Structures are given as structure tokens and as C-alpha cells.
Length: 89
Image (tube, rainbow, N blue to C red; front, side):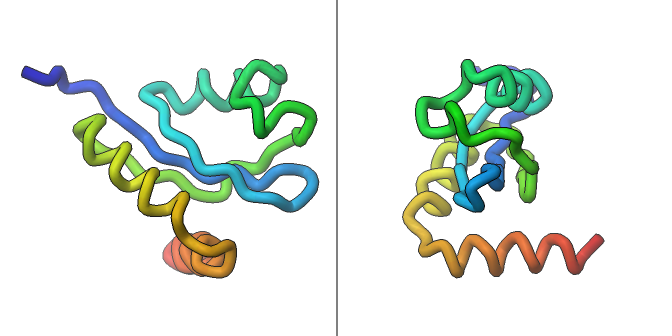
């Protein structure tokens, strides 16, 4: 049985303008790892970062499925998602 842990998918905008999509169960700690250069290989040397989108899930499986879905999207579709979420604020 899965515990009640929270799972996140997130999008970072790197200083070169590229987008990185990732998964974590501790968003604050993961962002600190990216900033310190110990995050994903892709993000090393691309900081500082801006957290431009995140979603919360109750199961790791659902979060990982969503991460996979978003990673397959075009940059334009990812930008649309970011813009949509910002307009809801």
C-alpha cells in the first residue's frame, strides 16, 4: 500500500531559455539541488532557474505518467501550459 506522500512534476526555465521537466517528492529540496549544480545532468550549468509550473499528485505513478506526457510535448505546448497556469493566478 502506498503512503500518503506528495509527488510533484515541475517545469523549470533555465537561464538559456530552455525548459526542463522533472519529477520529485520534495520540490523545495529538488530545486535546491538544481541550483547547487547537483540536480539533473541537463540542468548543470544552466542556472539560475525559474520554477514556471508544477502539479501535485497523490501517487508516484500518476506523477510519473504526467511527467512522461509533458516531456513528449512540443516546446510550444509546454509554453501554452505555463501561460494558462499563470493566467489562473
